[in-house]
Length: 396
Image: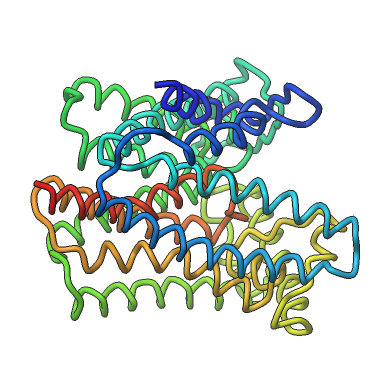
């Protein structure tokens, strides 16, 4: 019981990461190593098939994470300060990624985790509306002219300082509620949906809108046309991911002037300025990649505090092609497991949720730095979910 309580408190504390308790450490930072130790040593029986499957997941993900870590540290090995900073950053990323992998042993554990994440999403996303209306000042204040034409409703962030975290939380919450959650009545789901959408009005983020629409489209596609196995399903996915990745690479390398007619989508000068800023980040990252393509060079990005709002260009700059391929492996491993999983009923809906959310995260990560705590927690959940889903079917 104490493990579930600690785990629940840790998850629910994620929206309050901007409020330090000890030095620069927030409650979730303080709890993370404690919770990781407890969930790893969690007592109780575990299905032998789940144990075997989780062992494979842990070994695979640990291997990818190890390669990513080596690439990141190698890129700053010539500066002890940067090396120390990178080491402790990777250590924290490890904890947030592996805690849900260690904890989730069954679909019941996953449902508990998902319900807690819905609460996190509701609190975190809705806080953007509170900030937008000026009802409360959060630690990080990012305001811009309203993209909706409503003067009092400014574009803002709340408890989460970036829109990418809110984008993937919102998509996960809605996919879970409408695909899987059967114990909540429609009234509860509709109220939760309205709270989320109200937060979207405050955030006014194109990333959040695109990610949500992608989730709906992906869920529809996988529900209608994908029942497990390889063949055309695999080909269609590879095509979708390839087009998405190719599009953002081409977009990132274009001259800013060529985007003059489209960069202000959203209706404000701030929207155009945001795209200009992002393109500057992409071009700077590309200049690093061209000279350090194998392991990258994280020094300049750390020195100037630059966060590249694209996971692939960012990781290529920070850890080279070695680090970027390791991150791609963390995406591809769970998606492949979901793709070949042949299930029906609720298990099929869980499969659809997993694949759709991975697509959402893939899209969202093209427009924000990613590898945030929220990003890693959800990726960890999705990494272990195919195993517990498959074992629950075989057990049944």
